[in-house]
Image (cartoon, rainbow, N blue to C red; front, top):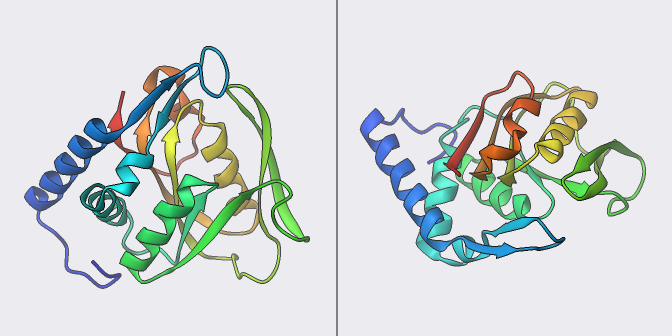
Length: 190
């Protein structure tokens, strides 16, 4: 699929989404009490390592916002998704990094995780973000702080987040409610 691909039928979209969900459900590895006691970690590494799983997930995510200017992947597994989706759409990709990984100047946003606090950053120069339409990607939506902070970064930089998507959403943690006015899509919700 490219940025100029024809609109797909509803049946084709449903079939791809169903296949992506089946692969994510089958291949996700769950780890209890990681990285902290009481946290259940969803490891999507097996999904990304499987050629069909990775391709199907990337195609599913790319279909969500074919008219974006830029794809943004959140540190670190979002980098994999962002790169694959950007290539599929024919756009650029920007890595939303954890604090201290980019040289200054940066736009920074601190946020709360289930098990602490963190900060995300994007370059404040070198990449034209003003007026860009952005598809924001991450692997898991849990409490929603990471995705919301990334969206805030792009808003601060003058971009418009037109959609956000994740591979897996942990609905019981309420992360969807912390998101902005942009649509949020998850391939699998548990």
